[in-house]
Image (cartoon, rainbow over all chains, first blue to last red; front, side, top):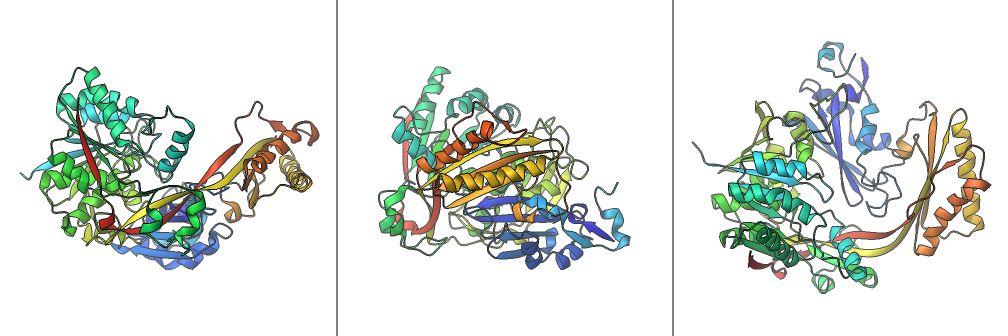
Length: 115
Length: 451
């Protein structure tokens, strides 16, 4: 089944200069392999087109079912220089909740917020 | 049973709430209460303010609020305080705290001020290269406001050893504020990177306060926490090896669970295997988390590697101004009116010859937050704020932004909503750059006072 990432994982963003990090945490260890396979650094960068101007690095921690994405050039030149209303990029991580993934139907019970 | 020390958070930033700090002081059964109040640009903003306003004392503007809220309980319970509220004047902050202690009738309480982080006058001699762009630091000389090195936990530990009940600092790396009590209480060697890695990781989990107890977390229907209007700040019950249980005062809102801890574990971290701090290089990749009770998560096995021979320096520079303002549309056709308003502003900026490095006109409610990453097929909103911002070299140019938005009131288009009177629509940009300096060239200072 095709679902938005918000059913599969939760996320948080943080800032350092002009670099944002986006932590993506699987809701269940069973979901993590599908998240890791499909949400690559390249795909995340493409998804944030127009926002992330530099490279994206991905750091998976399999034992915690977590991936950390480091996005360079994502904060408009840096928190103090940014013309974006959300200059710290605190709301940046919310966009990735709309990324679509393919998850086996058998894992449906692990998904969150599926009405 | 193993010895445990209880370290609580009193704040995660300058603007943080005060009541959870008071609650931690009163009901947290704490050995230490630690305050983090500085953002990247705090020191430079304080320098700018001090230049303009000779009455500004140069420390946390909420110092009195925070200390008055926690001192009575901390003194009664024997809780020590470590805080970076000293900003650019830790000695002044210590003197003020001593004054507040005397107001409470408490004499003879030892207060320490840790300084020595500000190196504005010699930063250009100590470091050659800007980390972000590889340019020479000398290029920053004409616009330099301040430079400060991130100190580690050692001077705080020294002050605690000397008997200080309250330690107030200038710039210190955030996790170090929380780890210093562990080093002191358990006698950790400053080069014991195994314990310091674990301890610094716990400090990292505490430094953002409620962000590990349910703050910056709730998402209705997906991640709900109880009473998100009533968060407790975190408490770590730390053991001799640095492993700890993260928890909070019972009866508070929020949650401490694997989800809140995982989100905070990597918050503002880049490579999780190499989180560089002044005291140690932390490796989060080995972390083991276990829910050991309601709102209790045990954190163990965070690793550490030897500290680097350098310290990070933040260099702040005057980089011009931002002018910004917004106005509103609603109802059927809000978007088409907003689009015409945008066009009018673009033409007006040409007519008044706005000299800007960058101009941004967004439709708040539609694309102001996620910009180009906004889905193209999203339905048209009922209300839109047109938000315009420009970055300029001079304040005169930045002022033009608000003046052209003023023009939209009677010279604009139908159904334009606007907020009048408005606040100041320009602000100064303090750009922050980073560099590395040799560790041995930075000498922390410690001064002691008694109330």
